[in-house]
Amino acid sequence: QVQLVESGGGLVQPGGSLRLSCAASGIIFSIYVMDWYRQAPGKQREWVATITDGGVTMYADSVKGRFATSRDDAKNTVYLEMNSLKPEDTAVYYCNARRSWPAQAYWGQGTQVTVSS
Image (cartoon, rainbow, N blue to C red):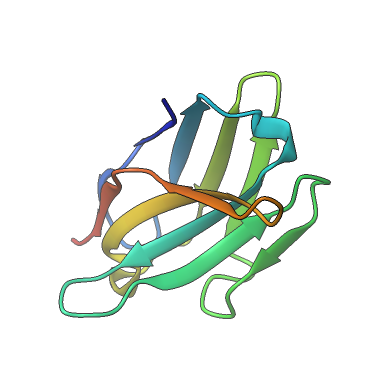
């Protein structure tokens, strides 16, 4: 059974930082591309960041320079370090594990991040 469990969300003031984690089980974690998405109330889910199985990272323009994703294959965990947080970063953050062949994709349950003073 595949499970992705996000943690680390919470309430933070503007300008603050949070570190999200996503722990995977039931998959060979090291061969999966890991994505972070977020969904704000009333909005569609949007892509935030990706880290490939080779460690290449990519970011949405809205978070570039503020967020950083990394992975620890020994711990089957991917991280999202979020700095200089803004109220518009408020959303439920989800991790996604995917591979192309065979096509597989798995989602976590999400963790709430609220940026407010």
